[in-house]
Every structure is written in structure tokens, then in C-alpha cells.
Amino acid sequence: GGYCISFSLRGYEQYPPSDYSFVGMPVRCIKNVSYPQRLVPMEINGVTWSQNILKTKHFRNGDPINIASSLTEFQALGDSQLPAVYITIPPGFIEDVYYYDDYAVRDSRGLVPVGWKLPSKNDYLNVYGPGPYTSTSMFKFMSEEGWLITGDGEPNDETGFSLQPFGAADGPRGFLRHRYSYLWTSDGEGSASIVGYQPYVNFSTVNRKWGLPVRCLYAGAPVVDIGQVEMEPINCMSAMVSCNLEINGSSSFDVVQRGICYSTQNPTPISILESCN
Picture (cartoon, rainbow, N blue to C red):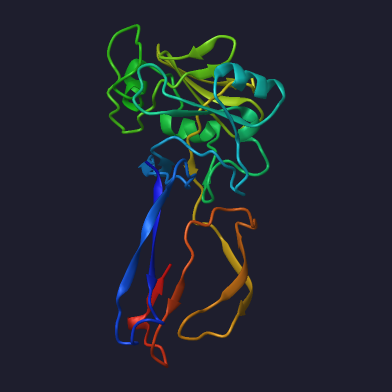
């Protein structure tokens, strides 16, 4: 499987202008196409979070992140202070988890998508509250499956925050899992949020070579600046428009679709505008 693109060729030369026949072309597939992930938003305590963890193999400018095929390779990339991701399905999980080292998270090319940001300690405290943290207060944020709980009660995910016991990808010791949920935070190099099985909440600094998942916080609508628009002559067959585009002051972002909005009438009634990708 993979993303497929099909093309069709219209016979302008062979058919009269009134004939809109199409000649179908074969479809060829490309495997492992990197496509910008859609983060699913959810609201809790008046703040919008991503419901899912980040899963990307590229920085915002399109540069690839080093992908480790094993924990040993992941450790080696960390030893060299290189941005890396280790992708695997941990025991007890049904979907893959992307474990990023801190060098990828803090890279100047940007890891999280435009319009989102890495949460801080205070952002997590806004979700969990100021404490003290007990089973009653924390079980409502924790997913119902996966946790190895020692004590009374079970996680119920009453809030829908669905915190999972991702653990951490640590090369020499393997996975630290099932009893902890590690997530990177924005509070400085190696900063992380840690939720334990007792349960407890802790914010501390961990080894930058460790692999932790990333959960994102909505940063507000991006500021789009369009400048130096240039247009080529437009005819019945083609239209060319070019411009300089910046989002939040940066020209590094993912373009997932391009298009032209057009009309066949002059002047153009807004109600009949059509578009094509």
C-alpha cells in the first residue's frame, strides 16, 4: 500500500472541442511516501491539544530526520548528537510509536507542524491541576489499557486525555515502559513530563539520547504573509501565479496542496468561483 496518483489525458488534438472524452492512464504507486500528519485536536480545560502523538519523519522544511532501525543504532545517533527517531510498536501497543531524541525535538528546523507547539510544564499542569496527585485525580487522564498499576483502582480516562504508558526508548536498557509515560516538554534541553503508575507527576531532565514521544499543543492560527505576487498571462489552457509566502515569519513549512481559483465569466460572480488543484 501507499499513496497513489492517477493521471488522465484529455484529447484536445484528437477530439472536437465539444467532446469531453478522457483517456485513462495507468496508475503507479509509490511506497513509503511521507505525507504531513494531521493532528487530531481535542479540548481540555479550555485548551486545544493534539489527541494523537506526533508521527513525522521530516522537519518542517522537508529535511529528513535520521531513522534508526534498532535501539542500538538509535543510541549511536544520540552519541553523535544527531536528530533521530526510532519507530516501533512496543509490546502491549497496537500502533507504532515515534520516539524522538532531544536533538530532533530542539532542532532549529522545527519538528512540530506549523500552528502547533511543544507543551511546557505549565501546560501539563493546566491539565493535571496543581496536585497533590492521587489515583482519584490522575486515573481520569490515563488510558484504560496498558498501565501496570500497583495499588487500588484502575485508570478510567474520564477526561479523554488518554495518556498512554509510552515509556522511553533507552538504548542500553531497552524500553522503560508500562509504568511510566514520558513526553518531551519545551522547558529546555532534556526537559520532560513524567507520569508514573503510583500514580505521580514529575517534571525533570532526562538523557537527551533517550527517545520520547511528542504531544502537541495548539498555538493559534498561523500568521500568513503573501508578498511579491507575479502572474503570467492566463489563457484557456494555463495559469501561472507565483509569490513569496511566509507563515509565522518562516518560509519553512509543508505545502500539501496548491490550486487556482478561477471563473469563466467576466466580471467574476463570487458565487460561481471554481477551483482546481
